[in-house]
Length: 356
Image 1: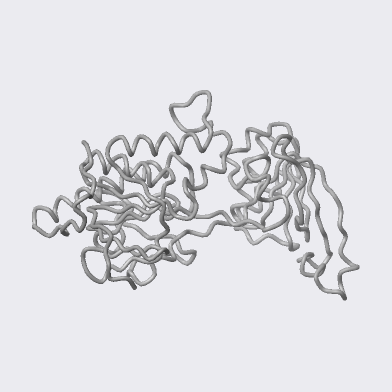
Image 2 (image 1 turned 90 degrees about the vertical axis):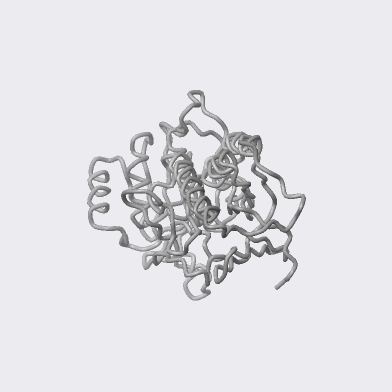
């Protein structure tokens, strides 16, 4: 580990999605000199969304990348600094925090906001990268309305898939659910709701089925998908086994949109060893509930905001709101440190000072 500290900051924010940038706006306006580190997915999941129509203040909609760029410009206007950088680890054993990046650079900070988001799980199939945001989505509530009247395919078998499919029936001609087994792992209440939709003809279930390829173009969107099916489930595994490959049925299926609902992975690995608590999925546990300091973790001075905490709503507006809360909570913490004379000392004489 490098012993050379690049710079000390009052506040470091990990992540440049809606949560991190909103935290940056509020922190800069509070003269907390925030350094915002972009991470390995700059802008977060909003950058994969071509049109955002549910963020307040944009009645005509706005593209995800444009919204992120505007948030970043606003944060920088007030004195926040955004840098390319992926956090490798945070050392919370002593104060100030020691933040090491994957390139070896080391910063120290009096407070730290984890706003590093959660990455939607994908299948790694052909067509996925090209069509993400162009007919392929990981958020039904974000993008479902764009495909009104189309047949839509939801991939998954848990609560998220049931919830996404149920929501999409508002817009779709027919919602198809492709699940690799012959039973869902969702809670009974969600299964019951979906089965009601099946009886109504709004949903059809493709049991023991997996998607192997997406076909289409960014200009025209998704044209169709390639599916495989096996009566005993997990067809792609059967396809890879020479003894069972002949038993797998492969076919093309016409749909206008595909929604992956196979879960998210919160980006919290770099916080291992800090003592923060997470749930079994890896989402940060914060104070939450009533009263102030709702974004505080169990580690003093370390706060969480956005999808790294929120395993349920995962919307840009809720992430932004939590980013605001985290910045306010961090400001209160930093104010107490300053009163006690316990703030860290600047390492770099060139460190920028935020405007108010």
